[in-house]
Length: 252
Image (tube, rainbow, N blue to C red; front, side):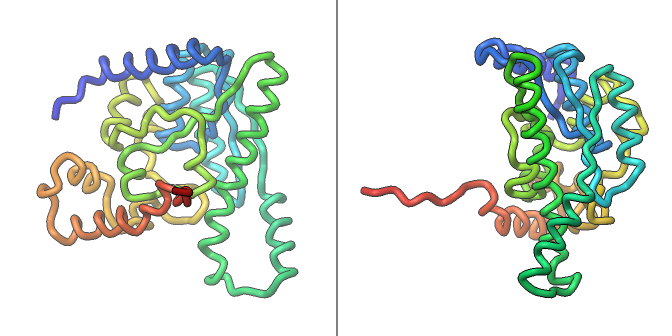
């Protein structure tokens, strides 16, 4: 499949501008993780809205110090304001409260701990969006940063990075996101950084058990990957389907 990066980038920028004009919106708040997805999203919104209407936020929480440094590289490149909100104490306070209901092993709380961090982050982003809406006399949205590859296998946290007001990368694979990043000149040290959540100590591919290139190949042609990889991807997709739709009882 041919990917016309110039045309797609223009369409994304037009999409942002048209939506903001139609809804009478002003700016955007983006969690800048130090990875390629948030960097590309920040670059696209800066091109679409102007740097003065983009607020980047770093949200460390027992995470890698290098991620904050990489976020600064992106804000310096595109010129938008970068705020740092350290969530470490908030996380630790929550953990102390949990101890009041019982004592649990590190293994028992591992998944809860990992997912708490993006949920705290999203609460902070929405707080800042509401604050800047008041400060700037115009509505600020929270942008999502997930790409098509990670969304398909359910690699996101419900109530965390799945929560957002506008999404611009959700129909692009990892490789396509990189192409867009190259086109809008995202610094190479961020664009080609090994994908990780910066929270669990593992890379994305280690956690998933498959490579992003294999997911992209599967999405383009299911029969292009070997059977064992195909089964892993389909198992991930099926087991995470509950993340996409909330069941709702309707009266007849």
